[in-house]
Length: 129
Image 1 (cartoon, rainbow, N blue to C red):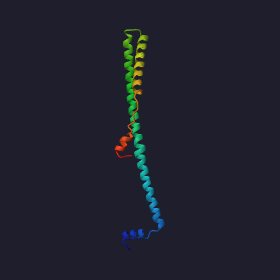
Image 2: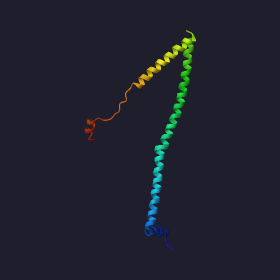
Image 3: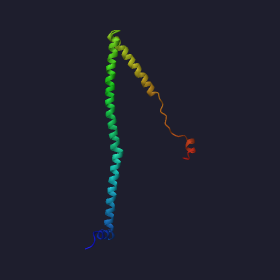
Image 4: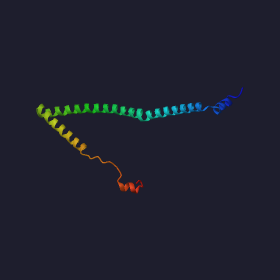
């Protein structure tokens, strides 16, 4: 008998076209599986995991801020109620909240979106015509 390395080398030399093609297709299949797995990991699973973590953190923060706001709001209403009747305190606090919300909404929605698209002269200067 001969050395196993000699038989392996002989197998690759005497390999038929069909066997070589089958081996190539198998390698291409493995390559595509690896690329698909990497694509799914980097562009599907990791971004979804990041978004889910951020959504969970945001939900906790929003819940805490809402609870704190309600407690402070009740405190303000009860404080104002010591000076005026309760119905007047509710009206005053509601008007203040409505006005503050309107100002914040106006400030946020009045900003114009400006895209940083280069103008034609900048493109010509950079040589990207």
